[in-house]
Each structure stands twice: as C-alpha cells, then as structure tokens.
Length: 544
Image 1 (cartoon, rainbow, N blue to C red):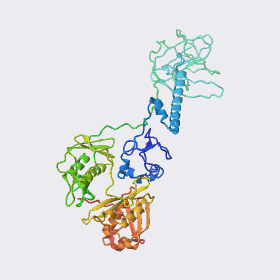
Image 2 (image 1 turned 180 degrees about the horizontal axis):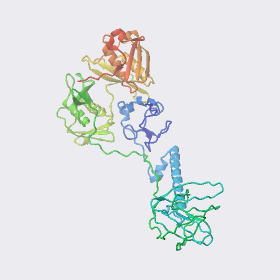
Image 3 (image 1 turned 60 degrees about the vertical axis):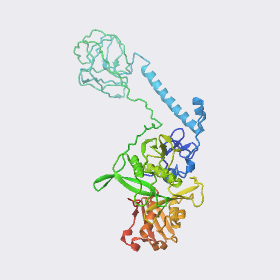
Image 4 (image 1 turned 90 degrees about the vertical axis):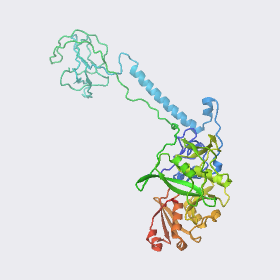
C-alpha cells in the first residue's frame, strides 16, 4: 500500500473537499467534523506523511488551550459579502469554475441551435430510408425496406470511390413516390448515413458528382420505371409511416457534489469488532480506573459479551466499577439516561453528576468517561449532560497522566507529546504523556525519556530500564523499529518488564507495528534465552 502524503482531514474553510499542496491560512482541520484552525506546522504535519504523528490526528493529544477556539467572523451582505471574504486564490478558482461552466452551457446552446433550428430537417432519425433516382421526366421510385431488413444503398460522391458504410434496422411500410426533379436525391435515416451495396429490396443509385438531400417531396401514383439496366418490380403504394422514432439523448451533463452530505444522527448503533473466546463472541473494551492512591489513571482491557451498543456498554462497565485493587470513579447509583452520536460528538446524559465529591476524583471520573467513549474511532468529542443540561462544554480526548517537567505551554508547534509506559508494583502498566520541546525524532526521544524514568509519578510507578542505558541506533523500516541499546540495558533486574515498556511505547506510533531489540548488535535471545526472540509485538494492556 502506498503511503498517504497528506492528512485526510485537511481542507479549505469554504470547502472541505479542496486543499492546496502548500501551507495556507485558508486550510482548516476537520478531524472533529467541524472546521478548526490548524495549530501545527502544516508543512511538517498536515501536508506530509508525518501527519500520522500529529497529536490532533491521534485524537488524544489536544491541549486544553485548543478546546475553545475563536469563532471565525462570517461576512454578511449576501453573495457580495461572501465574495469579499474569499482570498485572491479562492476567487481565481471560483472564476475558473464559472468560466468552464459557461463554456459548457455555450457548447450545448450552439449544439441545440444547429440541431433544431431547421424544423424541416429534424435531428431525429427518420423511420424510412428512401433512395430516389429520377431520370429526366420519368417518375422516381422510392423503396422502404421490408420489416427487419436492412435499408442500404451504394452512393459514390467522388471519383475516388470513397464509400462510408452505415447499416440501420427499421420496420416501417413500403411506399412508392415520384418526383419531377432531375437531380438525384437521397433521404437517409441521418444526414451522416451512407449506405453499403444491398442484397435485396433496394435500388442502386447512379454515380453523380454530388447528392443534395431533400425532405419535402411531392407524392405521385407509382408506376413501373426501369432504372439503369435493372428491372424494377411493381410496388403497392402505402400510406406514409405514422410512427417515427425519436432520438434519445445519450449524454447528459452531470455535476458532482463538492460538499459532503451531513450524516443523520446515529442513535447508538454501530457494530464493533468481536473476538472469539472459548467458543463465544466478545467485545474488547479499554476502560480507565484510578489506582489505589487515586492519583493516576490505569487502563484495563475488559471483555464483555458481544453487543452492537459498545459505547453504552463501556459507560455501564464504568458504573459497575473496577475490579481487584483499582478504584471506581463513577458512583454506583449513576444511571445513563441516553447516549447518542451526531457528527462525531457523543452526548451522554446522566441522572446525576457522574462523579464523587472529591475534587481530584471528580476530574479523573469525567476524564474516564471521555477516554472510554473516544476509544471508539468515530467519536471525536464528548458532551456530558445531567438531566438534559450540559455539564461544561465539549471535551476532547485528554492527555492520560500528563507530565510536563519543563513547564512547556503545550502548543503543538513547540511541543512533542511522548507516550511512556511505567509499571506499578502490582504489575499493571500506567501510561504517562510527557511533554518535551518539539523534536523530529520522537521515537528516539521516547526511548530516552523511558530511560530517564517516571518523573513526577516515580512514587507510584517505576521503570525497569537501567538509567545508564543509551540508544546506539534506532531506525524504522517497513513498520519495524530496529533498536540497538548499550550493554547497560542487559543489566536490568526485570528483562520482561524492560522489553514490554519499550514495545508498548514504540508501538504507540502508528508507523510501528513491531520492535526488534539488540544490545551492542547482539540479539536478546542470545542473552536471556529463546523467549526473547525478535521481533516483538505489542502486548495486551492490563487484561482483566
């Protein structure tokens, strides 16, 4: 599969379906379904294959400062106000489109005038193909083909004997006509038809320098008249055909829509991927609960019976609470009154404020709801309601356990968000989102931050990677991160935890599916045994 070299959610503020190849202030991000100003460098993210690293594209790294955006003033005054609000480039684009539309309309108008300006020479093909060849004052015999026969005649227009063949199938009656004109006249199904030599029921016209077309000929009683040297049989006159086929237009101009239709509200519907476990289908949910200290969010993987309403099931599982030593964040008497999805916004309506009174747990509880719903790829924002009334504004997916040791402002163009994984004493993994100055080598920076340790969360989690370890080489080739570490890494007291921490962190990047780890160029299996054979894939995160 060829890589995508631009973000699929970037488009102009006037038209989402159009984007430019170079950065412009007119670009907007439609990740949430609505147009938002782009806070990241467009050339580094939106218009390059590096867009998969954009925190907004990942749906989990938008800082709080980006939640509320200043609305773009809308020009008033009808179409003139709209036109005044366009950039010079946009005006040129629309002018070009209008010009092309005008050319198409003029072309169709000219075609219509040419085809229909002469009422005596209709564009529709005649049902009768007639060949007339009068000689001096002798009458002209007109022959129409018998049913299901081919009306054909050979006509030579120049001495080069150039003949163009066209065959027409018709089913009208036979008629004989006479004309006083001394000029050879031919009436065909269409002015562009020239007929090939016949096999039956036709008359061959003599060669003449030119053949004018006639459409309004007087009709006489038929008589026998020899034409050239061929005897012509007597034909019974019949009435003129009363049915003439009409020419159906085969090409009609179509206009492709440029604006995507607005989807209808989805009342909680979509089927989720299921797995088979022990002969039964299950849904895999990722839920977030607090640790025993109530200071960090811990993700868990929980299996439930297969259901098409996985978003509702996720909230119900949060209300049912945590298992083992984790702490529940929603009161057990909380009830979900309704959950609907519209344009990427999931609205969850509760019977009460779905948190405990403790301020720290209250913030973690609301975060756990947003995190559980935004695990579904179709959910971009969450609106929490109590008895139908909004509880705050729209919420994007928050950073999980943020760590900002340098006090950065969190702007995307100056900050990189690195996913780190550290382990609790219980063996559960905790994800920490560390903010560092913006860097183009985020994978290497992630490994360096893992080696540096858990930072502000070191009292609740720890790292199994020795702090003296160093990154000797890190490249990503065909979805495999090839990581070579210094010899100090092999001195870890928990090899499995050290390897899992690296694999969980690196596979958080969409460009990495597997990780290959070596120490001073030596494979881990030669150091710790066959269970550490490369490559490594992402392990399941805290299964229950």
